[in-house]
Length: 68
Image (tube, rainbow, N blue to C red; front, side):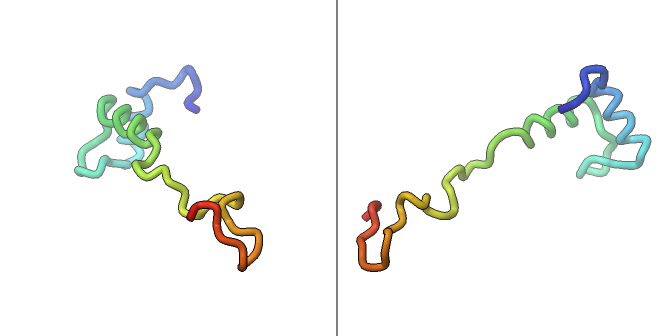
């Protein structure tokens, strides 16, 4: 979390002075920095787990799974 005394404009200015540029090759602005920050905080579109939960798995190879 950003410390309360930091301002988005100061962060954008520091990134620009450090030579960190936005993907378009332009310096950071407050608008671009805040939009990028809020976009990064959003969950990804696919929130489905990659693997089934352990409770959905059969206890043994001969037992049918609960999800079928």
